[in-house]
Image (tube, rainbow, N blue to C red; front, side, top):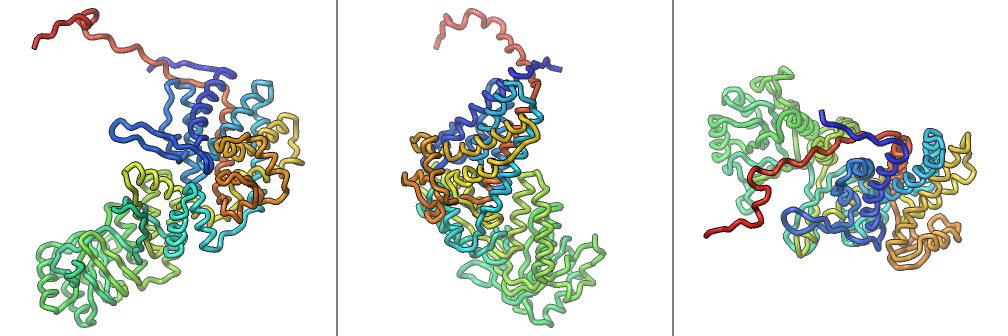
Length: 547
């Protein structure tokens, strides 16, 4: 076991604070409309230029192990804020830095860390309650566009694009962001439920001009197993022919004997049919087939459930108004599933989404949620260079998450003003002792820092701007760093989702509280450097090379 280095009390907190300082200084320059970019070097290719706080935080790794612990604690809260609210990561870092800095000073002055932490938590609860009371619900498309514009660093095109996308696919609908092929950013809608499996055979194509299968008012057969024998599917095919409807088959695979029969009957005109392979693999496949069954009103043909294909009846098949299948994707529009059962499934997936810790699972659950919610919007990001497209995609991701957060919990005036105003809830707040009162004062000072940092990034004196904001008692009155004037921020479209502000504050207080409570740190001692190769000690400078 490697030797460990241990550091205690003031020295330990000081090292952690140095790490937090380093990370916070790099991240905080991106805050606000006049925030600066950060260029991140890559081992290969062009540097990544970004104004996204969490992207900067993720790239920071410090040499000193103790300083790195502090930096990683704040990096963790930036990442968590991004997951929970989709934006506000830079605000969370600025707040955590302010609380940690003042908290460490208070502990060094002899305050009780436990009481300080209680005072901080007490103050955060009061501020969160004040934020909730002040929040305004988002109802109009214009307000959603405003939130999107703010989070995309003032890009109105992105704000409009997101508002239109959310209007079409709903709040739970999936909005995917992809690289475009032109200079313009474009929005495209995919109605219904789509998954990434195309037709098994091109012989199923019905629309030669578009090279795709198109069917109206079709039956849907969903089978977990491979269709390996014609005898087991023949009784069902005969029933479908009698009903005179097209048939979409979604199965694990289709063996050549069955495939030949389907193709021959399709070409003769006896049966309008198309077959696709089931999407995904393993447990995810089972879940997605169940989703498809709910959407179309089908029963999954599964031996796990004791259902055999040869005994399947027409009422086990789903129904859909329209099916489109190209080489890569299958889209089902207007499934006949019962809405209440689909809603129950959506609620179930949302619960799983709240509990999962895996990035992969989260992504797949969100995709399933979108498909069930009935639509996918695709934003194709345009730009002149790869660096520009990547930077724009970062901003669109931020804006998309922020708009969802705004719809969930409402909006507040932006520019750090909501937190600044919420400080009034702390004026009469009393802790049970002096140390708790200091904890409350730490939060009261810290919540002025987002507005202060926005002013600093705009080249102004933070204290002067804060005094200017507080001269007016109107909740929405603040400083517009973009235009350099004071006024009603909400009417100017400068707003923040309440969920983003709340999550940033709660996360920041949590991580800063950990620093205040830390009394010892343990890190591995770096090992000795590897020995030089024998014979290379003194000779490498005067070697004669012969060619």
